Image 1 (cartoon, rainbow, N blue to C red):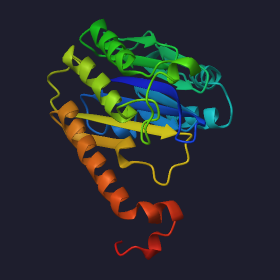
Image 2: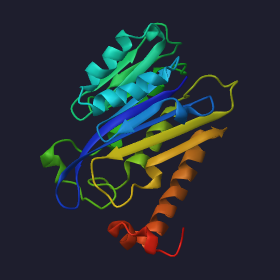
Image 3: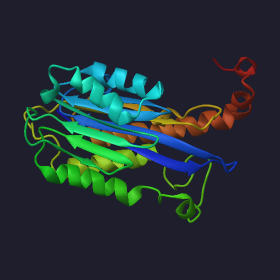
Length: 256
């Protein structure tokens, strides 16, 4: 099942400090992919799919958080997994990337390693799905390197990009979906999910960085609508409670 993308982006916060954000998003022609595939922390992002072994994602992030490089973490888990040839596993950490597709994954399957991002998919209509996801993300990704970061105008929510990573991840999924996506048209009920984490210390993490659409026939459209509502909800909440959030004094507000 599935196609997904994991990304790492470097940016500067409002104080000029270097930060890193990680994101992962996924869609498939089954319900509830958000509880199976995507994993993220402030140290990395991992996606586990095909014949899913959730432990690969859970332990992969744990190992990365413990300081293992993403390649060492995920390779060691695959080496201990008797079903490795049925798995797809990929991810990024603060310095590297890793992607694996077992030879027994269902066609079409394949992957792409972009260095700061990885894409993988199986049971797809063809390689154009992976290519479209990669190209869409590349077009929206921030320039790499300290010198190029200075060329973009920063803002509070997205560091060095005009659009939040969450929206750009949905756009990448949409590009893959437009190329055919998951080929199992006999399965109309689909799902999608995205997760984003940052090293930045913020008063509150935006809700639009943790989204799941568990059962729908229109995963991209529903995810976009969910994202837009979550952005509006975050803006409304910050307008009302920003000072309390910053002071960690929510008990003084007049709402639960």
